[in-house]
Image (cartoon, rainbow, N blue to C red; front, side, top):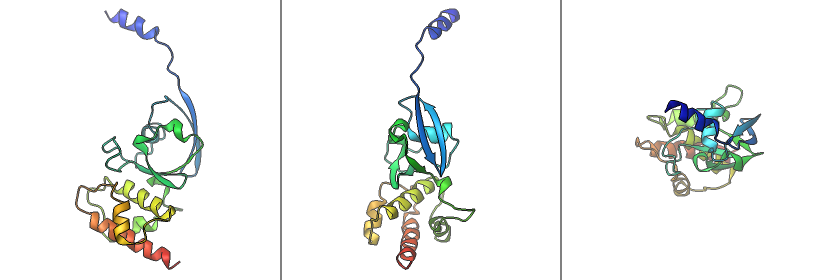
Length: 172
């Protein structure tokens, strides 16, 4: 029986890997992935960037949010091959030179995370929202952040942190 399984595995055709070039957190990388591998899995499994969280794996919780070419995307719903040539920023890439991003500082100051599981997606989503030039009011920020769920009840603190950084940015 075991011999039959080995023989049938050897007779399977080679799976069609695709070459994907990405710039992730300002570093160029080339991956060989199967065409159905999500960007989330490529980041976590192939590049060992585990800051981006795998939550619902259905695009409903936002834990997997990353910034792609200046816009926020759900990496669990995005195939890695779809983003060939793109620039990706994960939570590991938002701090610069050892200095936390202002949103990371604001999240700490406002106690905007409890379990911290959604925090990377929340921060990437807020940065993407700023880069997209959206959300002028607190109500708009709440609406545009509604795709990122906090199950611990820190949502009010998250919005406070985002509004603080937004106010700082408008004075610059």
